[in-house]
Image 1: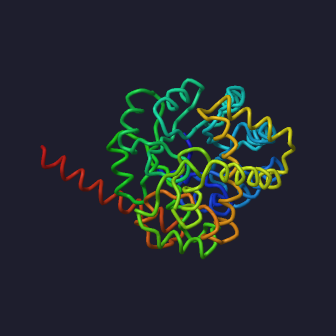
Image 2 (image 1 turned 180 degrees about the horizontal axis):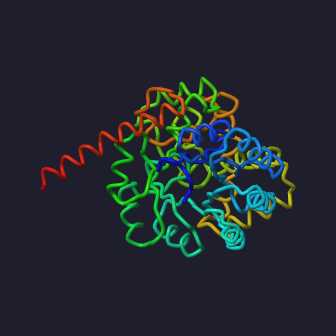
Length: 346
């Protein structure tokens, strides 16, 4: 469906899944997704063009259908024949139908069974389900349980995400009934990842117990490395959180070059499409500006570091090709074990 060599997806991570990483992932045989959720339309189009210049392999883009300039991004995806789109919150049915009419694969990411069912109803060609072990915005159900429930309820192909880093995980996902795995944190911790050195070192030094979920950061369940900054936010009262959110909203406006009208439109689209309160929608502005501090500026102790729990088990920074090759070698070994079990059974 996606045209990649191996059943491995590199997920879209804000400030991380830039053209260089996406192209390296796709060139290695995986399928890369370009992160455009914090990009204005002009920047988004430039990033698509740059990725196409770096690889002749298929790749996809991830964006919010409510973000400023979404209509221009949709048209660019169709015009440039981008292979797939990924989305999550507040999907717009009209955009989905436009993609499907143009042959663009629609593969949203969800973290709950009800959202998977809704995604299929809206026309998803495949779905990435992310269990609670995953980084960034995540649900409360572990990957194995979420995968089982979704497989029983939908008919499109399912890709498993949340807690994957190696070939054993790929083999396990296929045994559970998925058609592949999606990884964010593992691809973020590669040589082609644009994450600054100090921030990568902070990820490498994190333990599984340091990577927890908070709703104080942006109003939704968000798995992050609990550095001192996030610990402070997690202890903050509603007034302090509101002030932080207003400041972050202003920074988000500067980043996307959105007008006030665009921000208000996005705000109401989120309220309409998500299970969010007004305060949660305001708090959602926290993500881009604070994440940028760690992931772009290289100040891990002053910003937010979204992370899957699997970061606590990762100790090296291979190239994307080395990573994918190693995963497939490990997968082959695991498959041999399956064959031995089948032989013993006979």
